[in-house]
Length: 446
Image (cartoon, rainbow, N blue to C red):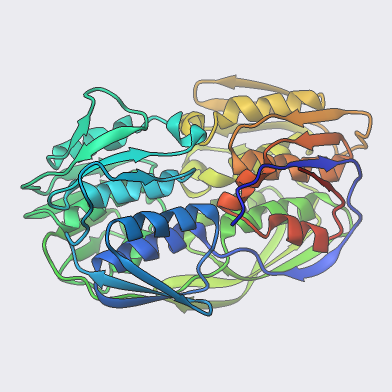
């Protein structure tokens, strides 16, 4: 996939549409299936994997660690050699690109893999993100990170020679929970995870058939990992990504006389906070043809233009709709009244500070907002023509802000330039093609 930089120019509003689309495959499941396939025994098969930059970074890192991965048509075969089988020369460099998911999960695996001594790095955006919480957790398993007290990439990891299971009270981060879970698989004894709120649970669902290795109790609130058990190969069919679908849903909800059906989207309850929240505020969204596969629910999402009420998102929504907050802020900005988002402080440590950067975007079209450490208020207006307004987004390395701003631009007609739009390829390489199929007009500036 080309990593050449390009900008997007939007000058015109989109017209009404009535379409059926299919969005890119789920990034979270794609990355997790590759990592879990690599530590299982024998051959795992993954169909419809998302071939985005973050997923390709995952494949590159695994190959550097000695994992054989072959693609045939739309199926990836991962030749797993079991827990603790990763190997690489001392000092080998692993580059995670833009992917915080890959970084946190693979560090979980590496921390308890014998004889690992590697340099870890990422792109300019990932290097800005603090890994302090992850590093502190992995040191409990006995892993070392050099230099001491450095919490940003590049850093060096030296794995634990005698990892022992830990007890962990998990918060809103599914990535930290998954890192602990994966580290526990190759540790001696038992690792316990207790969740106050159930965060994204793809990792435990994917491993759930390994009854010796993992048990899940109290509706997912308590996870027990028994270390050093053999993992069975997996067979995964990756559905559409509900986070990618959210941007097309938002566009439809705000565009009068428009409707959309999105086929075969993953509808795991820990991923659908965005949809539940909006339905509560007047959105015409429904699910059709619900089915189950790989211990995951999927189906079609049907959306129609809706007259939304101002959004009031309590902190409980954050854990199940983290990725969708930038587009929620756009919905709030174009809905008359005051919308309030609570419990969002972790948005400051994403690909960019998403609270601050989205406030800058909204300010450019005259939308007022007010933030504190853990809350954002947006003083929304009805959707009106803003063709005299101008929006410029500089290189943030943040795909969600690029996508959200694009939706804002084609709804309002504001003259918009989004720099370094190639970052959207980390999660949604089909984004522009789908938007074009809905009637969006834009220029690519290389």
